Image 1 (tube, helix red, strand yellow):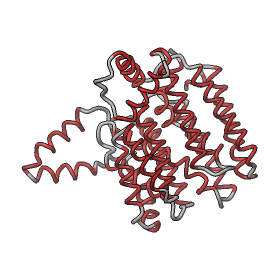
Image 2 (cartoon, one colour; image 1 turned 180 degrees about the horizontal axis):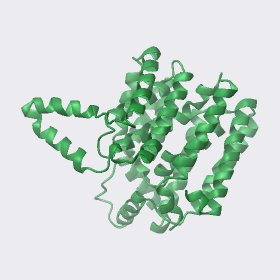
Image 3 (cartoon, one colour; image 1 turned 60 degrees about the vertical axis):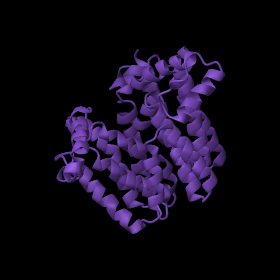
Image 4 (spheres, one colour; image 1 turned 135 degrees about the horizontal axis):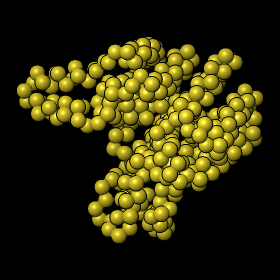
Length: 361
C-alpha cells in the first residue's frame, strides 16, 4: 500500500477522511455556507496534490508529445476536435511543453468544480466533489486518460440539461463531449433511450446486474461471444467476426486475465454502487437510468481487451446520484455509504497503479 510507504500520501488520506466526514455532516445539517467552504478546502487540497506530483501517467507522455508536435506543426492532429481546440487555446496562451500536463490537470479540476456547481444543489456539493475527486476513476482521468475524463464531465452536464429540458445546452454539451472522445456518443444514445424505460424494469435490471457481477468473480461470462457467434453464422460477416476475435485475443488485457485481487478491486465499486441504487432507487432520474444502462453495456463487453474501462464511463455518474440517494435516507444507509466511499478511495485512489507513476518518480 503506497500510503504506508510515504508520510505525505498518508497525510492526504487522513485529510480525505476528515473531508468525507465533514461532507456527510453538512449533508445531514444542511448548511450552505459550510458546504461552499468545504468545497473550497477540497479543491485546494487536490490542487496541492497536483502541484506536488513528480511524474506522468501512461497516456500523459503521449499527450505531451502530441502537444509538442502541435506547437510546431498543427496540420496533422490525430485527436478529436474539442481536444484540438483545447491544444489551440493552450498554444495561444503560451503554455510550454514542460507545463502542459499540470495545466491540463488544473483545467480538469476547475471543470469538475464547475460541473458540480451546475449539476448539484447547495448542501450536497461537497459530498459529490470529494467522492468524485478521490476515486479510482478520477485519478485515471486527470493523470492519464484526459480525453475520456473531459468527455465524461460534458456528458454529465448534457444529462443535467436534458433533465431540465434545456435542449440547447444539452446539444452543445453533447457536441463538446463527442469532440473529446467519440465513444461518448453511445452514452448520449443511452440518455435518449432512458426516456422510454420504466423505473420498475430498471430496478429489476439492477438486481440482475448485481448477481451477474458476483458470478463473474468465479466463472467467466462472455455474452459478447454470443454476438460474435451470430456473425460467424453469416458468411458475409465472417471477416468482421475474425477481426473482433483477433482484437479480443490480441488487443490487450481483459478482466478475466486478472487475479482474484484485481477482479475484486475492479468489481467492488460496481456491485456496491448498484446495491446502494437498488436499496434507494431514485424514481424518474435520467442519471440513474443511464448509470444502469452503462453498467449493463460494460458487462456485455467485459471479456474484451480493456473492456473493463467501459465502467469508467459509468462510475463517475454515481457520485452525482448521491444527492438523490441520500435525500430521504436514514443514518444506517448514510453510514454504509460513507464506509463505501472511504474504502473505494483507499483501494481505488491510493492503491491505483497510476499513483506510483505520478508521485514516486
